[in-house]
Length: 331
Image (cartoon, rainbow, N blue to C red; front, side):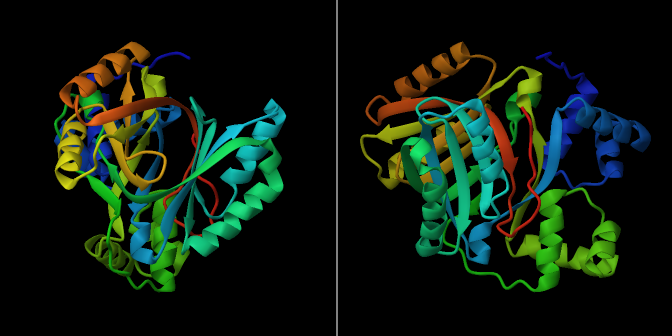
């Protein structure tokens, strides 16, 4: 794969989109010192080159009554054709939000939304009934919170702000118009209020007000840009940590260390499989190795085990647990 190099202006535009993918072209142009026409052209070029894979509203599903369950799978007797069938099945499953292929101790992971453990059990039984003979092993994990971070390593920036899905949340009341708006923003966060209004049968001012309320209520936690770091020469790893102890003080120390690491893009708090998980993007396995050695040296009495896995390909990313067309990336 040919590695793409970004010039200074492209980096500044991508930085602004990484901070808020919904901000107007005029606002980005003013910040980077270019005309609106040039900024628009450069964004289109970044999309054509595969650097940008999409723009998404990140939705806190816990606010609308959903819990995140993940299924990790180790395959057996899976041909390339069967793997394509499995991938297509999970990509098109209405309850799936994230489908990824790994190089590591698991071959695939799928994130599912369900309203309760019984609803997830129905999904899991359906999967096992259809494909269980191709699973050497599988493991279920329940996510309590996912923290999204900026791509600081791309821009040499120090924006440590976070967008959080999960935690203890009060339910938000949504009507059909709210749901329609969320569906459209989950698919493409850069749609204008006029475009959304035409599809939803509402005025642009109504759409603008509803989006504002969805943000204020915490249903929408951010507007993200999906950056394919692989075309920029980076590798994506997910690291599973087992700890000697898991008290609040230890967890806070680890979290702050990871949050201020410029390569960290996600931290996941979950029940099962690991005590804490994080994802980072680095130039090479050597950089990963050195980073993890430094991590272990900083917390010698805390980390019991540290297992990285290469995120080989993300097949689907969708932030809304309502049936909709899959949003895919092809790495």
